[in-house]
Length: 175
Image 1: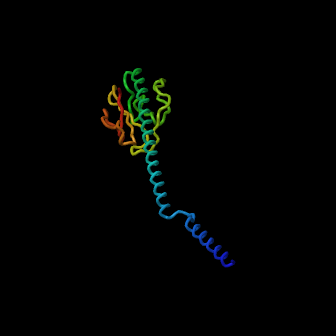
Image 2: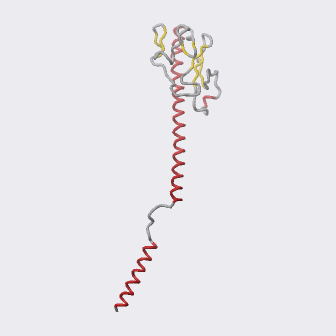
Image 3: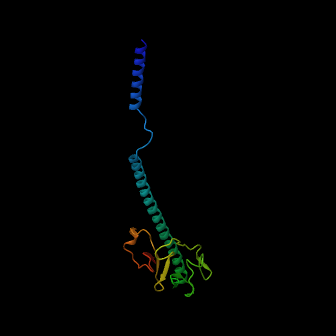
């Protein structure tokens, strides 16, 4: 009886070993599984980074367009008062035709004690043409405001009615 009990216990242990071996829980991931997961994460990060950069670029370009529209309004106010647009000196607006002050030295666009714009916009992002906007008066009745847009696929870059100045690629002119 003892032999039979020992034999029976040994069969139970073997079956238990076979069952635990068959259903053994993995203790880690294989190298292939880890590489696949890392690759998927890298692809997701790359696409998210590209989308984020494009969104930032379009946002900065939108601000540049908005800034130039605001300066256009100030220039139109100047024109209504003086009958001509202010002179330009090296891409800057000047009251006296000698000293340029817009976007560099003065926080406001003021001429002859009249403030046409409280705070002048500044483009501080380094660009191929350098930071800043560019103003050119062409005759007393017209001007060109130029800026550099980062998004070269911007639909506003096609069909421009003016010529951008000083390495800029986008411009607006008097209405």
